[in-house]
Length: 453
Ligand code: PLA
Image (cartoon, rainbow, N blue to C red; front, side, top):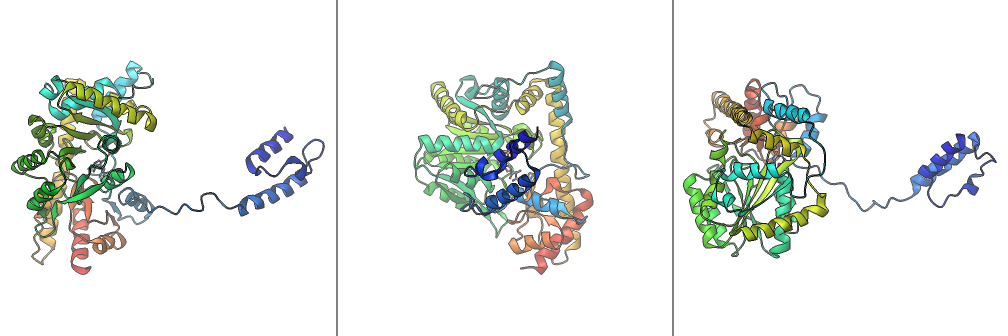
């Protein structure tokens, strides 16, 4: 027993070059005095050995998820986390949708197993997700022109598409909006896909720089990928109008570009799944080939389940079959096959008329709460700020976020002085705001805007 303890210690603690002889073990192999002495020698030799990881420097915190870490560390009771886009109740608590709990209970009752999914994911999920996006019975679905595979939520799905681009469109550039969700750049960098920006946000009008956007898309080399936010643009909350979407589709078609939609907020922007898919459907109606990444983090509150999909709309069923086979080939060595839990939740909810109805009602409720706090924040700003500044841009923005226009120093003031945690680009997540906190937030914004430059 004692000797096995020592041998355990020697295997886990000793560097390879120290052998048993050097430790002067007694016949039984156990001497408490020697053990202590030996171990202290060992500890010393371990501590002076240089690490193989000396060359690895400290990575900076993530600009979005790092905000949650900083928030957790703050002990001030006034603190408010408006960093990550995660829905909270009026009591500022995370929210699990009732319909999700119902679907999970059903799964338990049925005794669903935990077998591996196929590489492309759960068939019932893939069918449901494409139908939610394009509308059931859409010609691209009926004619089997969509290659859909389940991905690790929006991020993982974007990453699969980026890998496909890198492999089959070498040198092609992806154009992303300026600004965009911070992780887009990381995703294309890691996939070794070159990217550049197209103009999108105009700080002068606090609106869309539509002319600039069109010009930049026109100027991009033919056959570029154009990354578009399907709805509720992150971080600006500014979407093109339906007429502008038509013009965007025109230029993309003229230049033979390939649209690449990121749909992370379907149903969460307007409260309607169909309305929020209008941009994607416009492109599908034109018979274009394009990519769409989807996420169920926000609209079904399945953040940690990592459930989403990548869809590639092709001009023939044959092309779709080939594209799907290559997406699977990319997924297999990365993570083998996707997790089943979230996929079953989505498939169950969408596949049952009653639950589907309940989901829509809960989505409307969440989208509605965000709209209510948006209005209340605006009202507080207008009543408290006597400078005459026009705050109406807040009401024009849609989705979970408001792009306040606060610069880095002003955003720092929000956090350091007011304990309001937000990203340094001036974005606040209204999904993390309650009615009770609107006045406090308005005070913080007014102070930061007027007193910090
Ligand atoms: N695409 C956009 C435009 C997003 O805003 C997000 C999430 C995703 C994709 C990916 O989400 P998923 O992988 O969970 O499906 N953006 C969040 C969270 C809500 C984050 O940064 O990861 C945000 O706060 O911006």
